[in-house]
Amino acid sequence: MPEDVDVRTVVGLLDDDYARDILAAASEETRSAKELAEAIDASLPTVYRRVDDLVDAGLLAEETELRSDGNHHSVYVTTLSRVELTLSEGTFEMQLETKTDVADRFTDMFERL
Image (cartoon, rainbow, N blue to C red):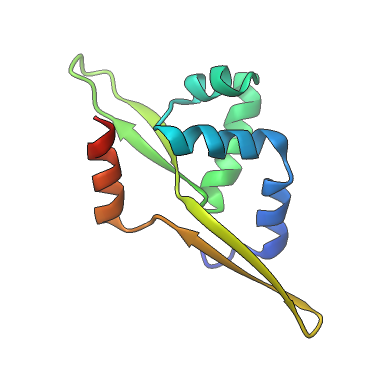
């Protein structure tokens, strides 16, 4: 997760129906923006806006899918696995667990083949 992402940003993203639906759909399998739009019944521009925000927050990762015909395209996979908010002494603290380990992502990608 990027170091500069704060609680408000993550909570704001998780409060958005489209962002939550994108995270859920991309946790099942890697999907292109078009596939995400179809899966969550949203417009492509809406999906691209949410995807950009989710990637910036480190909750979604962009990968390049290599195709035998030479046409490569971006696909997205959820990196978020857990969010924990704690209120202590007047402040919220957030802990995010993400699948950011390269070996874990490689294993996940291999299992999806």
